[in-house]
Each structure stands twice: as structure tokens, then as C-alpha cells.
Amino acid sequence: MSEPTSTAANQDVDAQSDGGSGLISALVVLAAAACVVLLLWVLGNARQDPYLKATLDLQGSADHGGQLFRINCAGCHGLAGQGLLGPNLIGISQRSSDPRVVHQIVSGETPPMPSFQMEPSSMADLLAYLRTLR
Ligand code: HEC
Image (cartoon, rainbow, N blue to C red; front, side, top):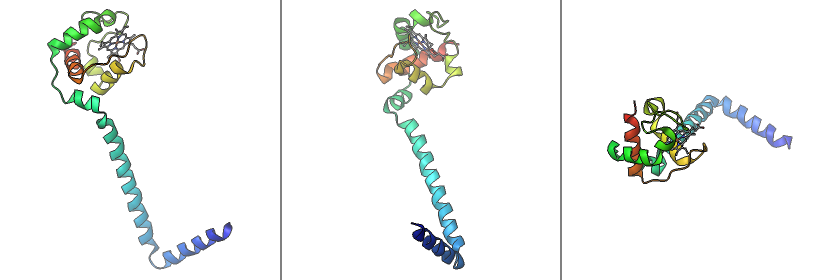
């Protein structure tokens, strides 16, 4: 088991004697390329959620969003978003990001707030309404 290691080490020494720095810079370039690929993958994933993308691509109607809010959300967050059982949502669009708010609404991760499933256009309307709560 130790033999292949020493052979590899010898090859390394050989490589270094005739331009090992070339090998090292090749490895550095490779590592940098891997980092770039990883970064693009992570960024791409954040944007690729099709529901989120469809929602954020739309220009919502705050009027319709207000109706949705009064039907679905006001019971807990108050008619003016001032907070009741649920927290105050005034300024939520400034405090939080659209993706986080959408996640909060669809995920159902924080009971008692339920998970809401709605069309991207309705979600865009709701976001537009939430932006008016200041
Ligand atoms: C059954 C009550 C209830 C209903 C209905 C409800 N929520 Fe909530 N909501 C909560 C509670 C409770 C929290 C706090 C959750 C936590 O963080 O533990 C919350 C948190 C939130 C937050 C995060 C607030 C912050 O400061 O980060 C947002 C945004 C939100 N709700 C939006 C909505 C919207 C929009 C609707 C309607 C589609 C809705 N909620 C319906 C109870 C409710």
C-alpha cells in the first residue's frame, strides 16, 4: 500500500524538476474553475425555483392583493396588517425580501400560520399589496 504512494511522490518530484510550477498553476486554475462552477450553481438554484421566478416576473395588482389579504391573512395579521395573533406586517417588504416572504406564505413552516397555495399571479398581487403596508 505504501509503494504506490512513494511512486506518486517520485513522479511529483520528477514533474517538479521539469516545470512542476506548471502543474501547480494548472491545479490552481482547476480549483478556481471549480469554485466558479459551484458559485454559479448555488446562484442558479436560488433563481431557478419556477414558482418564485414566475411570481417575481409579474407586476402584481395591489388592489387584488388587498382582497386576498383581507380574506386570507387579516384574521391573524389584522385588517391593516397591524398584527393580531400574527405579527405586524407593516414595513414587511422593507424588513424582508420577496423570496423570504413568499417562502413564509407557501411553506407552512411556522404554525399556526398555514401554508397557502396560490397562482403566481395571486402571489404577485399579494406582494404588491404587502409593499403598500408602510
Ligand atoms: C392562522 C393565523 C395566520 C394566518 C391566517 C396568516 N398568518 Fe402570517 N403569520 C402568523 C404567525 C403566527 C406568524 C409568526 C410565525 C413565526 O415566525 O413564528 C406569521 C408570520 C408571517 C410573516 C413573517 C413576518 C415577519 O416579520 O417575518 C409574513 C410575511 C406573513 N405571516 C404573511 C402572511 C400572509 C401574506 C398571510 C395570508 C396569505 C398570512 N400571513 C396568514 C399567523 C398567520
